[in-house]
Length: 348
Image (cartoon, rainbow, N blue to C red; front, top):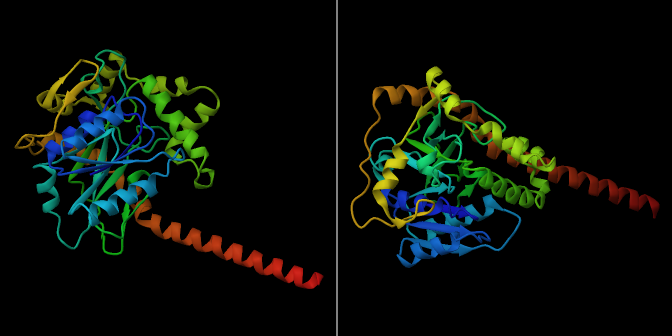
């Protein structure tokens, strides 16, 4: 697994331990200017032999470039077969056995499979640890300009030629044929965990994105970006919070459900720490007892993923669009250079 982090101490220990217990053999992590204790957590897993740390001091958030470097390193230096390019707020949950067994079932002619985001909503502050507090799952799929948008991400076979797209949503390489329309992995996603986290996350990202203005602001971040520029990021966060009354209403009409799977798993692998920042450890042997989904969950999951082919089409065309845009840019520059040359020649 690759992991790009900056100031994720509230979640990164649980994230790494969970995936090591779920079937990940090794983690390559890029630490980008963390100052909240994230670095020390990564170093603890490095000392345990489960993780390799890359320190990236840049302040311009070149995510695609940095993650691509890690994915290539996993293929060339660490003997990876499959690679998951994860964010710290994602917990890749296999629908059946562990991650290894699910990925082993992928036919050899395919090199990319999808995991579907399942978004957990922010809740009023109560239990300090996110997994104890955030057990309300959003079951109303849709594309929104805020963190709870529906989306998929890709796991891929190791390749020294891979390129990871923006947001880690897609992996491109000539030999990596995607298997579309099947989601053997669900990604339990906790994109906004508190107001403090929301402010830290978006201010950090926007400052970095503004240094790469030529790349543009991703569409799903546009609403938060404008709220930030207007000094109204708190107003952006508040409507995302689901209080007890809204939770009861959402459960009654099927928009929300209680999902305590991650909470229960993390309780089982916790080793120390306090209520706000529990401590976890790599597995000493064995893995997590994953089980196949029951019929109601299969139906709910099918409903949630029914809108993903729309996003999948965009992902499939992404490389072609990027290439076309690059060609057009080169043509425009070449044409302008020729005209400028003719003008200069005429002046002489």
